[in-house]
Image (cartoon, rainbow, N blue to C red):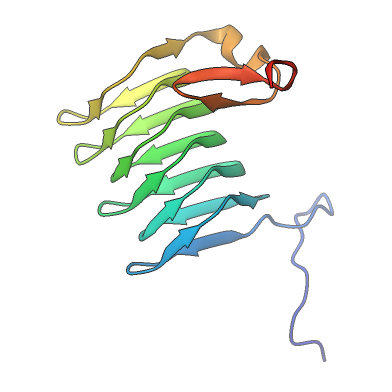
Length: 140
């Protein structure tokens, strides 16, 4: 009997995992994940998550977030690039630019940066947010 088994969807694709940076934990360096990254502690570096990044109330990200969907309840000091959606909860503060198709901001949520929105946002080539600006690989 195997202790560790790979779960799969009905289609045969493996489930993408959940990675948690717990309260009191500090990560220095870039983080990449195929699934979801939940930040309850702090990360100093870029987060790349294929599915979703969750920054919990009290969580801190000092760097850029690149994902499909970002939900922020804590603080982000860097840019957010989400190909589908960004949700800013009432306790959130973002010090940086946001690039997304759709945005939901609860009353009390703060954005201190430039907002880029629209259906063509997902068409942009993969890159990173540099000093509040989306930069493609060719610009580096």
